[in-house]
Length: 410
Image 1: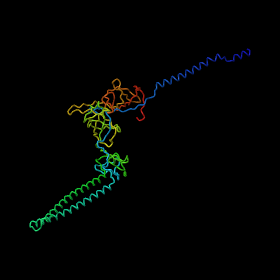
Image 2 (image 1 turned 180 degrees about the horizontal axis):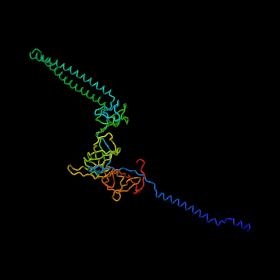
Image 3 (image 1 turned 120 degrees about the vertical axis):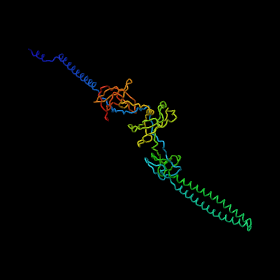
Image 4 (image 1 turned 45 degrees about the vertical axis):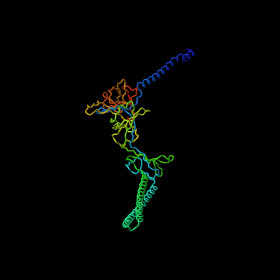
């Protein structure tokens, strides 16, 4: 065989290599597509678990039914609250109160500068003493004039003195009687002056009009204080504010469309915004007989039956007006047994109640029979047991059997 034939056998034919290269690239592309399909299948088959919050269902106590017929919100107010001021304008010499201090009725809260008032009182007392001395002098002179008149009358009866002497004795006696009456009136005037000066001195002492807690201190020593606003803002109008904590009550605005559900003496359950788990018994005092035209509401006063230091003025509060108690002797309607769950755990579908029970990182969708609302809870009559955990505010996408994870604070 010739050399040229051997070289032709060793040469690689490009047309024969091309099919093998295309087959290799097709295999690589198929592998990539399979990997992408597998990742997509895994993502769809194993979605990210939603995070949920849960609450424990608690057994509802068996008691007479007293569900809320109306809910409203308002504020704690004090019926006896006063900003204490002085009756006169003066400079503050001493302030004896601090915020949070309890004071009794008549306790001294502050004192004003009283040097001028004391001087006026001393002057009035001196004038009273002088008037009394003058009265005593005139009384003594009148006694002497009465004796002189008696002697002159006796001598005139015996015709031993002239009638002129008797007339002079009578005139002297009557003059002293008039002076005595005038001196008596001057003594009364002087006494009144002393009383007025004493009142002015007492006005420099500011006292508590009733017992309570000091909630604000408005003045300091050296400042001017006046019962009226004056001085362009440099004069204080009060020493401090006192609140009678025993007069605290709740005031709420009720929509006039629902005021027919409220009656005086009706039982109320109040919940302070600061203590949402604390249920405070209360009672309707009165319905204020006027409506607010701009808000279409009627104000309702509510008495707080449980006194507590945690209840302070201007706190926000939510109240639930309860069903009126049945008349005496009437058969008691016993509330059906069941469990209580938060209202936001319930999803209503087609008029029926649905909730999700959490157990072993999964949720179970259950249809339940609902009862009445009690505060922020709802009674579940059947379909749920005491101690089971329910999902709060379940997401719309949550389904039966979904795997979930609990929030960090659970």
